[in-house]
Image 1 (cartoon, rainbow, N blue to C red):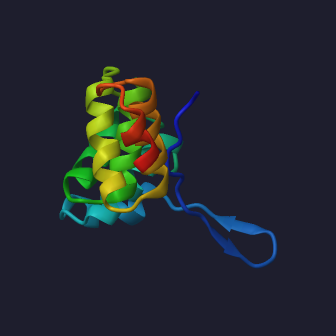
Image 2: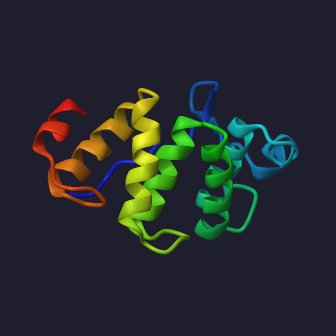
Length: 133
């Protein structure tokens, strides 16, 4: 079973026109430590919006944001560690980040943490903990 991760937001302009954000919009605030801008910049690198697509660089920005307490970034960083996207695959590290997102009430983080407890990935298998999440 594949895990779930957060997807970035795009804006709808008019009836059929999407505006996809680019890295230049977020870079200044991200470099100043704004965790939301860091998350958004990570999404830009993940998808190649205004920059060359790079999961490694996306992971760098998701980590900065996640360390600042951004739940969506924590979720995505967990996914990166679970999948080995831009980082070495590490289920223990994935569980840490899913836990942080889950504890903030992130529903997808809770689902992914429950999967880990159910399967015994990065944690001792615990069906009761899986059911709680």
